[in-house]
Structures are given as C-alpha cells and as structure tokens.
Length: 203
Ligand code: ADP
Ligand code: 5GP
Image (cartoon, rainbow, N blue to C red):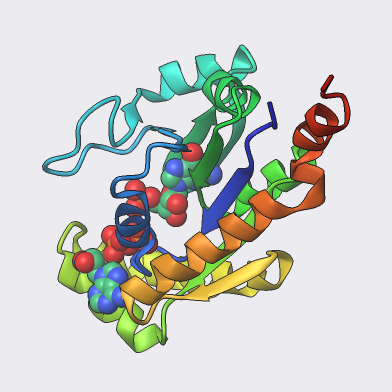
C-alpha cells in the first residue's frame, strides 16, 4: 500500500481555508482533515473533538512535554497544535492527511516531513480579506485588527510554499486544491508500492 500524502494548507485568517476545505471534502472519504488542539475558546457551533480539541494551557503544555504534537505555535495569544499520532496512523494506512495550520507550524512540518505538499491560500485582495473577516462575525473588532496585522506578516511567507491558490471563487479554489492533490498522488514516488506489486506479480 502507498503511504498517504501529507498536505499543509495555510493562509491568513478569513481568506477562506475552511470554506474551500468544506467544498473539497464534501462526499470525499479518502482524505482525513486533521483535528487540531487549541487553547482558544470555542466559537458558537464549534464542537469539541470535531472542530478542535479545546484544551486548557496546562493540558496543551502536557501534550507538548509528552511529544504529542507534530507541530505547534502561538497565534494571536492562543496555542494551536497538531496531535501527532493520528496523522502518522492515517498516512501509514495510505490515507491523505490535510493540516490546516498557520505559517510557523507549517514551517516546522516542512522541516520534520520534507515530503509534505505546502499550499498557501491567498485572498484576492486585503480589502476583500477584511470584508470576509468582518462579515464572518466570529471575532470582535480588536481581534479582527490583530488578525489583519498578522495576515500581512503571514503572506510574506507564501514564497516558501509549493503552491499558491487564490480564493476568488470558492468552486475554482476547491478545484485547484483537487488538482494539486491529484497530481501529487500521481507522482512516481507516491506509486512505488504499486510498481513493486506489478513487477512482482506471479502470473
Ligand atoms: P478561514 O478558514 O481562512 O479563516 P473562512 O473559510 O472562515 O476563512 O472564511 C471567512 C469568511 O469568508 C466566511 O464568512 C466565508 O463564508 C467567506 N468566504 C470564504 N470564501 C469566500 C469566497 N470565495 N468568496 C466570498 N466569501 C468567501
Ligand atoms: P482560528 O482561530 O481562526 O480557528 O485559527 C487561527 C489560525 O490557527 C488559522 O490560521 C489556522 O490555520 C491556525 N491553526 C489551526 N490549527 C492549527 C494547528 O494545529 N497548528 C497551527 N500551527 N496552526 C493552526
């Protein structure tokens, strides 16, 4: 069995990562979207263990101390991290894994897993980013301003990623994500097991 492909998806808050993933994942069972841990408070409608694992700072630190995180970062005053074991279990079972994470954590993953495919999502403009963040209505204005400042800094890191997807029309962005993942699956290095099976087939 071929190992799954590890995909890292980043982009400034409000650019539409969740929306693209929602479109892309609809009806797709062969891809696993990693559930992160965070110390931020749940938004209305967010479910523990589904949207995030909501932890206290003490619980989060304990996870780090036991090497339970593949990566982690502090973002706008809260900790976010990827629980390590589930990611490796899925990849070893041949399932592609998507990590929707911010830039500092993404660069840690790139160091630890150089084979990861790095995708950066950009908004069509800063003006549109602001309007999406405000329109989402999940953060107060102070947090929106913090996230917009952070966005300018994060977008400078886009050149360290393998692909850039501009989220103008969400359907197009989801199709672009599909194209990147499909081409990655077709890479020779991701089909070694298949080649092995064909060559060693005892007719
Ligand atoms: P992120 O996950 O990157 O923080 P979201 O997916 O939550 O961003 O999107 C932020 C807001 O922008 C949401 O209200 C969403 O409905 C809206 N949005 C996302 N993509 C688009 C798009 N292509 N065109 C217009 N609005 C969008
Ligand atoms: P939000 O609070 O809007 O859900 O997420 C804020 C930022 O944290 C987003 O850029 C999101 O991609 C990022 N994020 C979510 N989970 C993780 C994670 O496990 N690790 C890291 N490094 N960032 C994460």
